[in-house]
Amino acid sequence: MSQPNEEHLLYRLPGYLLRRSAQAWMGRLTERLSPLDLRISDASALLLIGERTDMTSSEIGKNLDIKSANMAPLLGRLESQGLIARAPIDGKSQAVRLTESGHKYLKKVRTITSQLEQDILAAIPETHRDHFVPALRALLELDSA
Amino acid sequence: MSQPNEEHLLYRLPGYLLRRSAQAWMGRLTERLSPLDLRISDASALLLIGERTDMTSSEIGKNLDIKSANMAPLLGRLESQGLIARAPIDGKSQAVRLTESGHKYLKKVRTITSQLEQDILAAIPETHRDHFVPALRALLELDSA
DNA sequence: TATTGTTATACTCTATAACTATA
DNA sequence: TATAGTTATAGAGTATAACAATA
Image 1 (cartoon, rainbow over the protein chains, first blue to last red):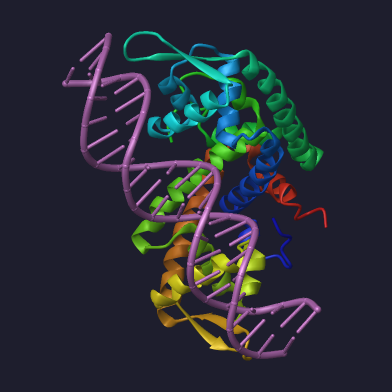
Image 2 (tube, each protein chain N blue to C red):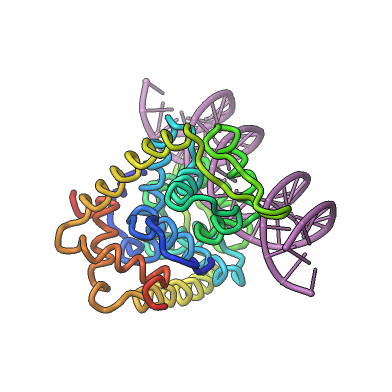
């Protein structure tokens, strides 16, 4: 992320600002996760799996908005790192759960992500801070349902 | 973008929400720009070039946070579409400006992007709406300088 | 017949490295 | 010596299509 020299029209547009700030902060998260050898989507899956055990690949994908074709390599990475194990539910579905090593990793992931959330909120002036999460939730249509 | 079945912890995290909402809305913008055969970064460059003429490639890149290695193919696309022309400033730098066709295209881009901005703001409840742009600007450190 | 899961593949975005040429 | 611009390339994210196996 570089600092813009001068202001221009684009810095008034919510869509452009949304894209740029997500880009900037996700870059930082990527850096912080790199010691753990985890991608952002891997980490988000780990957080979800840790919260609700024995979900299937398709359930995780629905919740994180990751296509099933992309869930396969994602879970493959976590499995090959020894962080998750898969147990057959029936001949078609598999329950995903954390291994012991996965639980340890999850603690580190939680430390990193909660630090990021704190840093993000701290960067927002107090007047606007409490409006940020509700606005984003609305943008994802989480509150209109 | 799919609707999550149930709520989970991640939907409370500003970083995760930031990533997901940017992803969702930029997907929509990509769709709306596709009839013009423009990528989002192409469109953002076009908007900037239209606002301030005769910038160099490196100046545009600095303002949009696009690396020079990625500016080359971007400007190449706009040039091959006949939207911009490059005029030598000295043996090293080139001034980028819109062609006549580029100006026409710019109008269409402006229509699409301003509609997107309206849609984004409309999706945010009124209570939170006016806090959104200031919060994002702060996240990009545009107001702290 | 619909769903689960996988593989292969392609496109976009972004980053680094190496290079040429000019200021 | 630093800067402008280009090329080649690689990693990551996401998408579609085609497929096998099972509910």
